[in-house]
Length: 365
Ligand code: F6R
Image 1: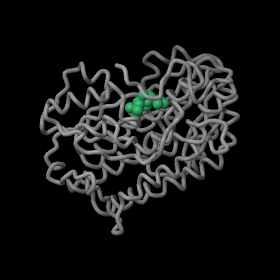
Image 2: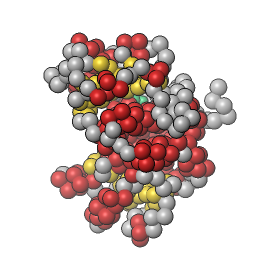
Image 3: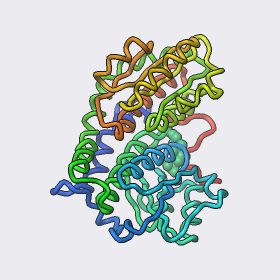
Image 4: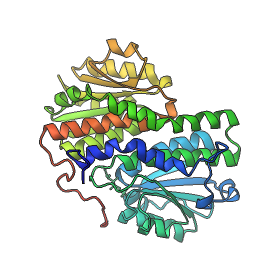
């Protein structure tokens, strides 16, 4: 059942190149354009959208945050994001010119389903990014973009996240094309980058052995902090959640620039800090943040793009990912973070596939 792997989580981590390929396959036509005909969202409908709400829970919410940044960047539509259990009670700004995007692997998460129903009541159209055909969310949404990740068994979500991010990237580019907010050159360039994600992930999976030594350090710690800026902040949230849920180590994700507004007080001698530094234009700022925590004794693990040599003299341990445009580092950089969580959890003898207190599908509010 686990196909030769010790756990479903690691099996599903390794399935990501295929899951992404499957998700992309039927969506890009021979002319190299994204084709969402079978979702039946009309270009008129897209032009009429004044704002978008992306609502989800947990890991799906983290994918939604990446989606927000992509849609705002390429399609220039304002996107609000909310956690489903909060959204419902926040008196959200929804009308017929709002598109609601819900993101859900299972399609059964009670809060996300309730958020969808609320949006429909207020006359918004709902687009679901969902992995389970025939699930409640996929049945009740106006449009469904299926992630073809295949069944995800491990409680900790891995391949669902990467396929959600890729789906949202396609949605962002599609909307941008419809609205004319992206030129052909950039559209092609970004889409090419999306298409090579599976190969790049394959490479990361082949070269994962050094991650085990970072995992071994972290497994002996009681706290860890993930820091980043922009896309890396959203990634920090996902990396941190993954680690805490499977290893039971207390972990926090922080926007790197927020550290000095309080959290820096928690950095002590040997506290591990995972610094995500994949964003070229924010790189110098991240280097300062790494120095800032190092000066307080932190053990710093940096994640950067290949070819980035400057970071070598700064962080204690470096994890490299293949180079990519800043907008598409999340689905690459999340792979070492998933592996790290997995190795830390197995080293600590945790029940990785079924962490205590958690359920795969959260059908209660
Ligand atoms: C974390 C995890 C959860 C789910 C969340 C939403 O690894 O799996 O945070 O992402 O419960 O579930 P779905 O996507 O099924 O709505």
